[in-house]
Image (cartoon, rainbow, N blue to C red; front, side, top):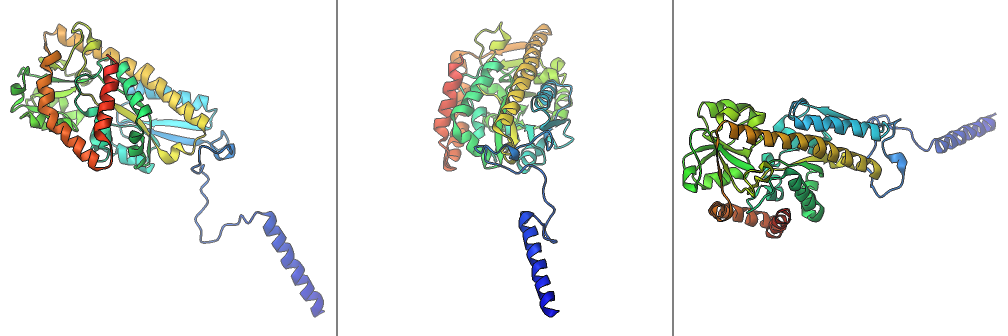
Length: 385
């Protein structure tokens, strides 16, 4: 009897062992966390399609925008979302969170980096200290294309040919998708006309990022205001003017407040698309790198093509028309335009050279070939003339 019982126990244990093998040892220990059913980060060189999102196991892409849906970037992003959802066959479910409902404007960089949002519109000037190399686009040059479509192609070429730009983003778990570019910055003032360097002294000028260093070096009091304070601050004389893209003044209904405009270059003053400048502030769309690596190469292509279309064909097309309308509206109301061309720009570049050199020295000390990258971007801009 004991022998039969012992034999039965051995048989029972053997059956349990076989069952465990057949189950693939997939049981979860009692104290372990629940399994994550979302697609895991993968190497995009693999051909194992089962690791990528599918219509049965889709991936939500949370896109953050600090602006309302009704402005240019909202129009572009809405079409982008439609294209992603349709062209991915339901494997990707993109959704935009407008008006900072997912991430506040100042939290965008950190939020995309940590995965609170997957993708988002981003203003590099807000995190200059985190992305010193990306400042290269905000540096002064003797020529920055006024045609924003040419300017966008210049920035894309820079990202296609300068690997360090991607390396800097990757340090923060970010990757570049596309870029919205803006009209080059001008100086717009209310009561005081600015035509020379000396005219800048003592003025309260609103700007952002590295440009605050520029204008401080010229003797101006450079401040940074939130967008909601632009109109009242200029109307009440809290600031004398702003250094920004000219379209900003129409977007925030400030045209009646702008009496003087200083343009840093104009190939043809009668052609508003040719109002070039010496600096600008392109705004890239970035993606969380972990999210990006969850997508198959084909899904990555779908996302990039959708953003390229939404940004260039809709967002920038609206922005371009608004830029022309802003210039025409200012001219119609009698705003004075001063154009610095040729040698007239050189004193402004010379005055800001120490700020540029500090950036080159500081960025070089971080291990980046800053001078070479600055020169490369300058050549790309010059080739767009």
